[in-house]
Length: 175
Length: 185
Image 1 (tube, rainbow over the protein chains, first blue to last red):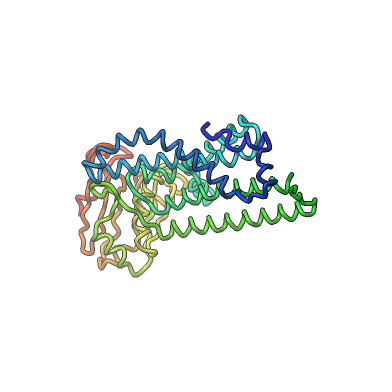
Image 2: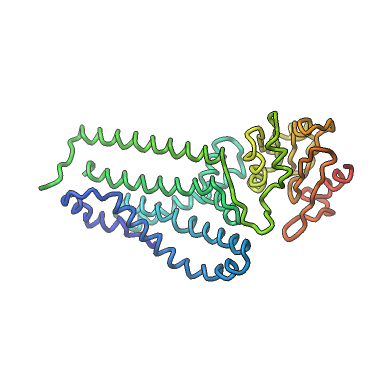
C-alpha cells in the first residue's frame, strides 16, 4: 500500500513524458529513488520494533545477534523484496487498484511457491521452492547468516528493479 | 524539441533487444544463484553454535578421498527441516552428495536401506573411507547429531530441550528406535 501510486499516478497523469521532453535519461535514478523512498519509509516504521532487540544486542552478545538476524530478515522479506515488486507492477498499470492487486498476487505466489516441495520432489518442484522467499527466510530467522540466501534476495531485488527499468524504457518506444 | 518515437519496425527491434537483454540477465542471475548454492558459506550467530558442525566432523568430511552420499528418507514436507543441517556436510566438501528420497514413493529403496522411520539419514561410503570395516550405521536425524569418528564406535548425541523429541518416546516420529541402535554400539 505504501508504494501504490509510485508509478501508477505518474503514468496516469503522463508525467513521465516530461522527463523525455526534457531529454532526461534518469530511468535508473527515478526507479532507485522511488524504491529507496518506499524502503526507507517501511524501515522507519519497523525501526520502532528494533528497540526490542537493542537491549539483548548490547547485553547478551550472540543472543542479540541472533535476534537481530531474525529482525533483519523480516525487514528484507516483508519490506525490501515486496517493495521492488510493487515498483514493477504498479508501473505496469496506471490504475492503482489493479496494480496493487497484481502486486499482492505476485507476492502471494512467491510466498506459496514453497508449498510444492511438500508434494513433489522433482527438479521443477525444487526450483519452484527455491524461488520462494520463505525458503530463504528460514535460515535468517534461526540466526544463521547464509551467503546463498543473501545472494537470492539481492538478485531478486536486482531483477525486479531491472524489469522495472525495462518496463519504463519500453514506454519510450511503445508510445 | 520533441521526442522522436520509433516506427513499427523500430518497435520490433526494440522489443527483440529488450527480450534478449532480459534473457541474458536471467541467465546471469541463475548462474549467480547456482554458484552461491555450490560454494555456500554461512555464519552461525547462535550462542551455542547450534547450526555448526564439530571440528572433528569438519576434519573428516574435508578429508574424504572418494564420493560419499547421505540419503535422507522422509516425507517431502520434512525435507526442508533436514536440508539446513545436511547442507552443512555438502558445503564442506564437493565429494559429499545429499539425496532426498520420498520414503512413501520410493518405499522399495527405503526398504533396501532398512529404513523404518521417517526422517532417517543413511550414509554410504563413509566408514570405509574413515578406516573402519564395520557396516554402515543408520542414524535417526531429528534431534540427533551423529558425529563421524575416525575410529568406531561413533558417539551419538541426543539433543534434549524445548521442541526436541524425547529419546524414550515411541511412535513413528520418535527416537525410541534409534536409542536401541545407539546402545548396540
